[in-house]
Amino acid sequence: MSNNASPQKSTDLHIGAAVPGCQKKDPILVADHIKKTFGGLTAVDVEHLEVPKNAITALIGPNGAGKTTLFNLLTGFDTPDTGTWSLMGNSLSGVPSFKVAKLGQVRTFQLTKALGLLTVLENMKLGAKDQKGENLLTALVPAIWRKQDKEIEVKALELLSRFKLDAKKDDFAASLSGGQRKLLEMARALMTDPVLVMLDEPMAGVNPALTQSLLDHVLDLKKQGMTVLFVEHDMHMVRHIADWVVVMAEGKIVAEGPPDTVMKEQAVIDAYLGSHQDTDLGEVTGRIKIIKDGGQA
Image (cartoon, rainbow, N blue to C red):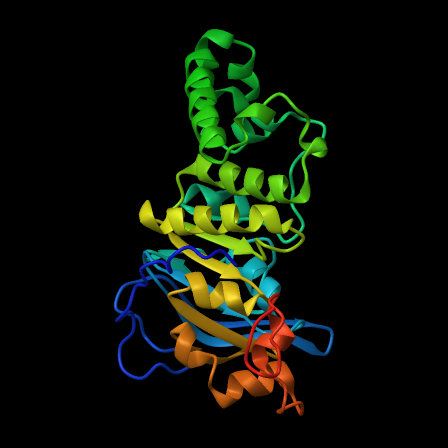
């Protein structure tokens, strides 16, 4: 983790006690009774969830807790058995993923979805919404869409410059490293001017040299007025950038709260460690090795 100063955290986000499903003072996403089963296995069973606006919320939990499945449900990539949810008061229940993105809620994937045989710039331009040239008839008349296409390209190049990928604009996306693909996917998500950005394990498979860059970009999203909800296993990263933490285990939300307090809750320790109560939480889940005498290596 970088030695940079810790970012300014958003506080006073919730109403009442910080318990699972607690109300937020200004929620951007509200979900109720979200349930998904596969065969006889309940993957997600979330009674109530509110995501605070203009804050960074981490969704954590052990493997198989249902985090990615919940992401898939909330973004229209899968359909729940039951449940309703809304973004800024607009119902997203049953709305397909491409329409969810148009409404301002976008996501990235644990395994990046860049189109390898298109260039980096072409991948970016695909992310723009409401393109006139996407219609079969208007596509045949360049005069209709050429001006908009140029504007989209200018915006794409500005974002690539911000993410330090402008030198790669003409390279095939398949030639990028794992970390560069994560940056490309995050940059492409911003082409839609989202209000809520959902990142599924943004640090997974990333070279440590790019980790701080990705962290800075996540923090920048909040500075630019966006809300971030991300899945992550690295507890040191969660403590560093998250304003709020939601903990899942066996499909349910078992704890919520600010990172410094929620990590100490027994429900969180039990979810991660089971019977191994003598093992440090950071040692199991973080990337920084915790030495028994309290130091770090």
